[in-house]
Amino acid sequence: MRYKDRTAVITGGGTGIGAAVARRLAGEGAHLALIGRRREPLEAIAAETGAAIFQADAADGAAMAQATAGIIERFGGIDVLVANAGGHGVGPTVEMSDETWALSTRLNLDTAFVSARACLPSLIDRKGAIVVVSSIAGLFAGPDAAGYVTMKHGLIGLAKSLARDYGRKGVRTNTVCPGWVRTPMADEEMRMIIEARGLASLDEAYALVTKDVPLGRPALPEDVANAVAFLASAEAAMINGAVLTIDGGAGTVDLPTLAFAD
Image 1: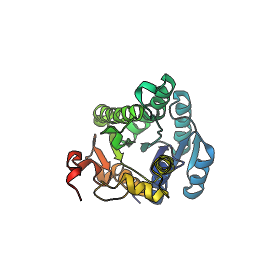
Image 2: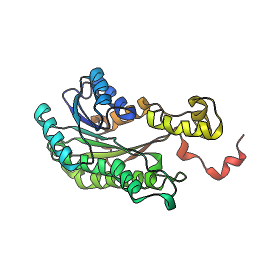
Image 3: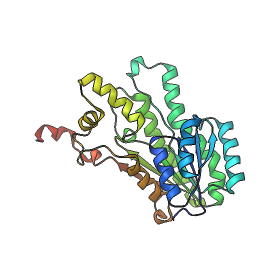
Image 4: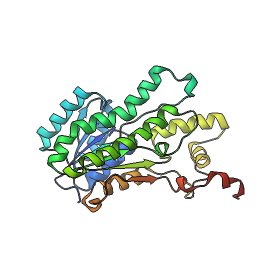
């Protein structure tokens, strides 16, 4: 019960990694405030966890200020922010419209910045913690994904800036960088691979994209939630500004040596 009497705010808390984090923190006694644009997924997780719902766009400054005020009024303050909201930004650069680029910025980077800005005063008061959910796309570049890759790199820079600026005020900020995780968003990408490669199932698609990952499988949302729960807890009291990969060892692979592998 590491989170007994502590309040955690989770953006993008209705599905995938955000939902898994909600379940994990609720299981350890946290009061939860879930933020997202779609009410139905939030309600489903709230029914499981007892969370409070604040339907809002995490990239909207006024909406986040209102949500934060409501959270503080209900729970007394904020101890943890999990900046998890995100989205796509794929396509070749020469074909990417201004609108697609701006949407990628808003969904990935703006949501984290705006939610951190809104929560920081209370986090400072309560010596809290922020965990930013980026991606291994924040460390490496995938094909035709300049928007997504750029924003995920930007999230790491934001988290490091927060760690430096607010560490002296008692707020720790760390980043997790998952690789492939079996979420609804990743399933959509697997369906594209199924169609392109003539595969038979999601399992075959995930096996293909993780064939060179040392652990040989994608992560589950719960794998990421375990890391988030640790980083935001008192057990990680001296960890600030860290970047933790949750990728089954994908980032350790020397790509030019793959030709020598069995």
